[in-house]
Amino acid sequence: MELAKRFVDVGIFTNRLDEMRAFYGERIRLPYEELLPVGGGVRQYRYGLLGSVLKINHSRDPLPARVAGGYRKLSISDPRTPMPLPMQDPDGNDLELVPTGQRGVNQIEIQIGVTDEAAFEHFYGEALQADRLAAGRFKLGETVISFQRDPAAVRATRSPSASAADVIASMRAVGMRYVTVQVRDVDAEHRRFMSMGVWEGAVPVSLGAVARISFIRDPDGNFIEISQRASLTGPLPD
Figure 1 (tube, rainbow, N blue to C red):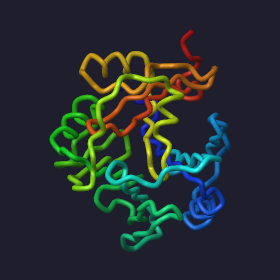
Figure 2: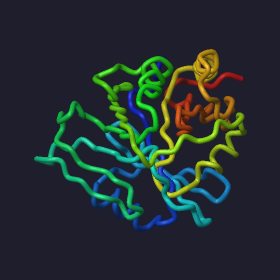
Figure 3: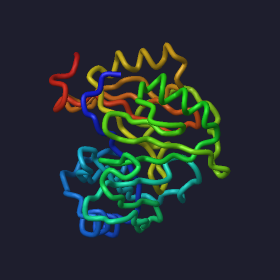
């Protein structure tokens, strides 16, 4: 997979905008970047995350509660931290600050609770072409992705492809709900995923001249946004 950016972005949904912005902007001291309207009553507040972007999606409508399994913990490299410091944000999402380099984390680590570790080994190693560090542990660009069996995790029922708008609506719930991988050619990557039998979330669609995106789903149904952003790759295809 040809990456346009070597860092994976993280998307969170919340109803607690002020508390979440205070936590990530003031306590964790992530730099605020910009506000993007997503549509459907959602605004996205973007924070720099050591090359990744933390996307805090604020919904004006009440969100369902956090669900078990899936994207369950975010670890952030911090040279000021002498030992791992676990904490929770205002919505109860688990995260930790870790000394830079510990566990091989020099940027961030996204931890996933899964139903079938072997299926995820194949998915991240073959479909996403991430570098395998150890069992249940991969590196996609500079971002570490790790997973382990979680008895609370549930595999979603396989559903047909939907529109990008419907996918975004379906993932709305409190918590870490998706990740974004920036690529050079979203159409080519999406075709490759489909040829491998990857679960399709949504076909590629252009968001004006800003980005072209598609969605795929991992073996448990967690969403992954595949994005070709014009600011990284140049003008989008017609």
